[in-house]
Image (tube, rainbow, N blue to C red):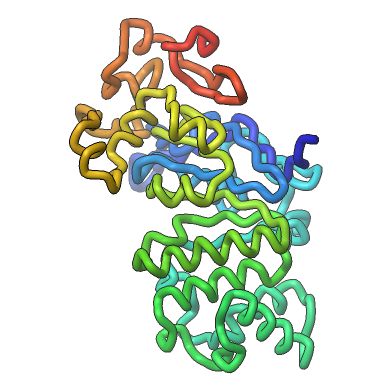
Length: 330
């Protein structure tokens, strides 16, 4: 039986206008940060979102949560298209959608105690107060592996891993159904990363929460994700089950990314071929015609500069946007 779809994103775009002029500024172009993305997340599922820095991963996540208002497209959550709702209508739905920020050093208010930080969502949404409020915060701290007596400490009194645990506790305060994890491990040591990954796994098993896990670390994504989506220059170029995409990547960009992942086996590492991409990532201000990856693609042919490939099923739920696969033609 298919799992319930918690989040459905369809043809989402986010263009940032480029203005020119001082007294009467005019729009001269658009930065196409997210360009026609469709993705879904099921109940209790983790979808990994990978790609180079600047490809639009975080912008996509913030558009899903309506921290950025999308230019066009749909974000369906609990039967509502979030893009059509005002702030008043969004407020109750925000309780069920939360975010874990990338930097545990910058995402916590240095003037707040741990009690204030973790309990802030409870205060904002008037969930609880008084003795029940304090008990709930201590329960959340204990849930993420922090001692309740730490509630009176300030952020500078915690280590990096402990600060990220505070961020996780804050995200869980309102018992959300969906959490966007925006590179939550990138500022942490490797040993601490493993602890946070195990924590997220345990919480998902316990509460059935769904994650969109944004990262550029392909090894971490393979460990934590059920499905993986690969993003390049504002577009999803491939999405599939984790094992399929790592064992048989179809898109040339995915193949290049995976070829760069170190393998802890000297013989395998010595004999495998690393795909080195030519050139630099094009600017989203002026993306290439046709397939956005074609100027750097080692398998590109004439049609790649003319035809925009769409995500098409290549079998077994494996979707890829590449003209090498006939089903990708519009």
